[in-house]
Length: 347
Image (cartoon, rainbow, N blue to C red; front, side, top):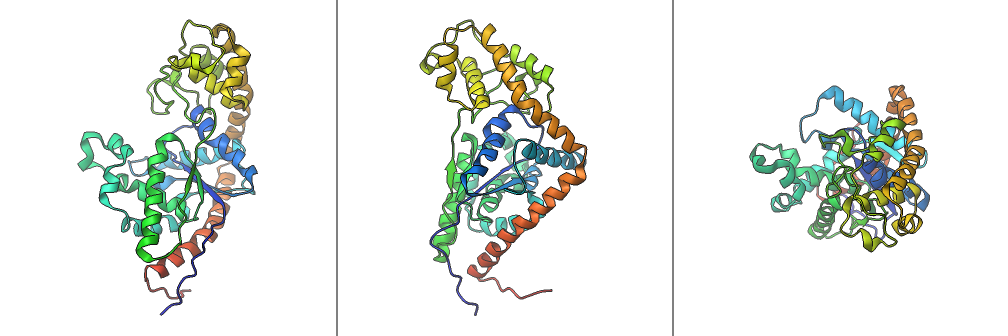
């Protein structure tokens, strides 16, 4: 019989997050995720970032397009300030521990938990019986992504909070079922002025790469002219900007543009309304456009440069995968021992 696993009572502070390569990156991805990911490198905690390509194939993907999008997301990480020497950056499918641990979690999680996930309901719609099993089990794989590194914190948007709560439930149930304190109960990091960027055409809807109208979003691949033009045409209202945030309560488009300005400038929304109190949008929009071009044009240029050298992107992802595996593989081996799986040394 193998020796019992020594289960620690404290966990190395570690941040994990991932982005799915299912389409182009937008300003919402930058302000809600990538900008924050880069800033988190300065907190003194280990940061592990992943292009979650296994999640992407829960719905059918064109293979060539998936390859391109995986590299493009990696380029967006790098162009936004992720340093592959300070952080670990890799694509999920290169580290098999994710899929292996997901199967074990499939046997820990309950089917009812999966059916309660609102994202499954939204994506499956009335055709749930014809959805892939992977789409239903998506949150179990997400739990494996996080817990393979025993991550203590995950930066998430509001739309991912439910999945992180399920990750916590899986960790708690695994620990309880096997009488260990092996997995941390991961905490969410939800912060920032523009963690949820809304459509430029409808301030009540999230900015999305799937919106039919390209005018509804700013893509990280847009050039300076396109960025400025989209902001000039963004939907607003005829009222001037107020001097307090309370004055934006029932003005979703105005609040969205204020939030975007705050996110790009790295200031609080209160500071934005204080600076522009009483200004019409004819004054505010050009200032916002100037700021957006200043912040985003260098990212677009660096993404374009990186995409001209896919071999370099692949090298960075491969190096990151080796470093990720060095963390995840021992965790998985401990899980196998905890669950009673017989393991022998193989060459």
